[in-house]
Length: 319
Image 1 (spheres, rainbow, N blue to C red):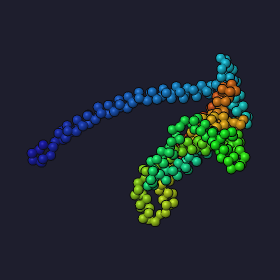
Image 2: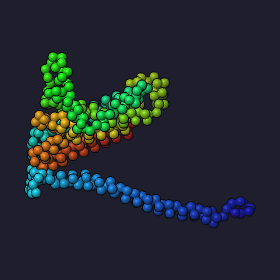
Image 3: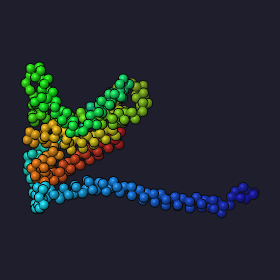
């Protein structure tokens, strides 16, 4: 340092800065090594997905071009015949209609009822913890067990519903064998079982909204409905996105409840694409056509779920 001016010479300044510049290089190298080492942590997940999802799907696509019966050691390549058969098969479109009903119908009901439960439980209520547990309890029951529980409610012979109906002097109701009712019964049972998941996600979203927003809105004279439309609903968009995507995927691949309640019958009137594919493979020994239905089902689920995800993600950014 200059004794007269009290200013450091340029050489001293540059020397003081050099160590900081050079010490940052080893840190950058270490960060790069750490980032590259993280790839090894992804490998088990990649292997699991590749083994149990990607490879079976690719194998299914391959089988869809054959006439394999599911048991024989030999099969023939028949090109696009199975896909032509799929488009011409009237049962395919009945099954697609049922599948869309299960997926979209369950999604709408689960989100409306789940949001209603969440709004109720977000208030100061007595026995709130017990109520939340009771609503969520069906989620912990196996879907096949839940299906059989409701089967004994709606069964024609010895069902609880018909016991009550006959008690009041009315004729028995064969609801599970009626194509006009059985699909909606399946939607309601699926909604009843999994509405608890939607409720928990919405409740977490509601509790993350700051109370200051509601207090400011009340000072401005906003009604409860206006607060819900302007504050609650926009800030719940991430929760809505999660619920819609989960519900759509779960409803479109519905299987267990259908098997327990109706077995897909009468005929194919209550089949979903999952149960229809199962019947084709194991009961009708038509594995090639079952694989074709599986590919078609995967494409429908992929298109609808991705479209829903993109739509609601855009809504999140608009808020």
